[in-house]
Length: 617
Image (cartoon, rainbow, N blue to C red; front, side, top):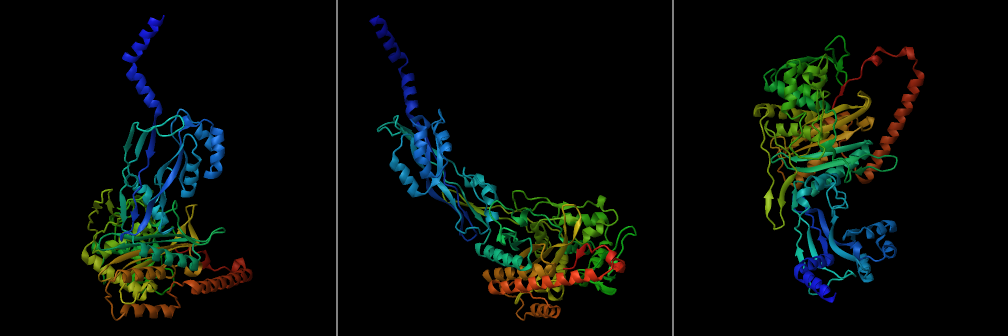
């Protein structure tokens, strides 16, 4: 018997020794993951927008935890984690690794380390930090507990930012302690790639600041703004603001919320008139000197109600410039009548309406364009004045940037460069532009839009020292029912400056401003002016209108019409809000008194007319 046993031992040692030694080692080997430091996000000037800070993460090797319940009871109050969750994690055999708490503060890590609990360890892991707090929050986005981007730039460039994790392999005894002089290997983690954006932190702050206070002043449901460098397509600011609700004050959009200029659709209203007129001019249907007889209303089909201008006026003979300056719906419809249905639709498509912009963004829609086959009686004319399409703010900014760039598109982009773990900087590829209209057409339209700001609907956009070219837009808001609201509007201003040597183009849109601010010239133009003035000053753009000729003319027109063109801040804002509220209460009381005094049969014929589908400004 002894001889047989000795022979079996010899067989195991000689023939199976390597196998059993390998199994023994595998039972003591422990793999500890090393998370990769996530790349940073910078603005164009190298300011930190998002970075990673080293913290400690608590983990467990469940195979080494003798009493999961007792261990969980000790850790729960320290880690501030549910005790039952810890019990489940500590009992998850045969797994040899389970996270208990990510990126804990240093004092908690020190307390856990001092307990010396079998099977419990700590590993370095980075925690995401945003030095600028909520600035550009809807643009930058945020990361989840697993370290992956959930939205915004963090999501868009997650594969670049995340890096490559590593691991440490050690041999440990049954108490979870490293065995000296045993196998130990390490695969280093590779840091993620840094992302440099075209955003300018200072301009972003100014855009949010001006928009925030203008939303407060106008009691709007929200607002958006975007600012772009015409010379290269760099997007230097993207702002989104939410109006006050029953539970929250006016605030800047946070991570996880819409980056409105890139995702939110609206009817552009009168800013579309730039496309209608540019296309008719480009294809020689009209000339800058062509004169149109423009009444207050026009009926394009007997079966439908007329289109109206925003304010009554006698029959006028107006050129293109005067039609644009007055933002005349009727005049624009007469211009549209010179084109075939397909031509007008081609014009919108050529300017990028109905297609995503070149700026890659999660959830960016194509927008909507009414096809010519569905124009029927009024579709062509509704499209011509801004109701046959649904656009994003960036799409409409693209239209004006094309005119500012001499008729050639300037594709917008947000990524400036990437910097890898070894410090090598790689500039982002920028798409080439394409010609949409001739330089001559662009020059004529720029001249006409300067008139809009000098003494038209956009006087509040004027700037001292710089000529401005732009257009107001006011569209009745589309309701969930598919019909347009009788009162709620989307009020906008889009333009560029200096008009003679464009540096920046910008858009500002306010969602449902109060009645006193329902037009783009009153709601959006003042904020646009403040943002543009800051940008031109910040970038030291030389003034090209030293005599302030346009600015003086615009301010005189504003005073004559009783418009206040400043965005109030601080105490001035509080006084302006109080004045607005008093005026609204007075107007509501007068309206109630008028309703009580008016008999139903006394209603005039005018009250039965369809409301104007596009407001002036």
